[in-house]
Image (cartoon, rainbow, N blue to C red):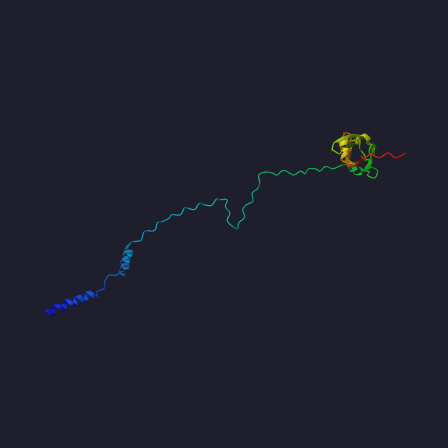
Length: 202
């Protein structure tokens, strides 16, 4: 009788020992079931803005827009005439072969030129080494020369100490009857010798 009682008890223990125990592998299944059981959130609906109509002046690609006609009238261009000199002035030039470039101090040099027609007077100017006009003379119509007084080339001792040769400038301008420059001005240089010369022995 005791044997029949023990056998069923042993069988119950063996079944309990062989039954699978819950492990970590069962957890994902539970989680999966929990996730799959949830309902997905609804997707929000986005309304796009209404497209504005194109302006009436819009031109589709491939078509040429109409040319606009200006409402203003362009003014005609008038060129400014260039200054010209009279043809007779072509003959007026310096006579360089007769103008002395160097001369002894105390002598009066002469400026020569080829006269031009329709000239009423010639204005002659001498400029000293400092750039100042120290002499203004006049030659009548038809003249081809003008002699500058010797005293025009006298300079101070300070300038003489700088060099034995100082540069003076000269220029001649033809004038018309209204004392307006008629032709171009000719110009050149004078180099008076400032060195003192020894008196020859007797």
